[in-house]
Length: 156
Image (tube, rainbow, N blue to C red):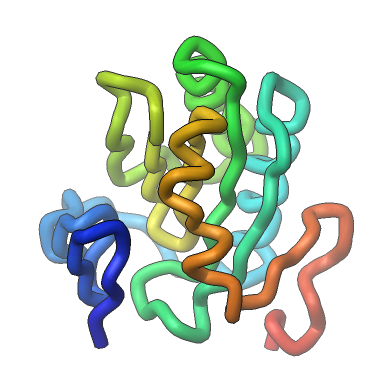
């Protein structure tokens, strides 16, 4: 299965155009869905406690085999995106979550992608978020809120 996005082709075994096989080998224990959901909620809380705005969670697990959730948020400018990147990493770490496999886009801070394996955090400037329109691309996937517990059907 291939996904076409903004002139680039990604297949289901890639994140940000990099094959999953290129992820560094990290010895991580298997975790249950509720633990992952806790990490996702921590990422959302960190973004919302900082300069993040319009934060959403998209459940992409049914259509992507490489990750379960996208967390998408925006910062007002590249400085805010840089700060959000640090806050999210710290927030996930605070609840015992993993370090990201990789963080892409740190040079320009227009779109930073934090690959945690079980979830991916996308942090955009407002202009980049509008341009790439990930919510539109993934509109057929359920959008979730961090205030609620993980839906029962997903915890099974």
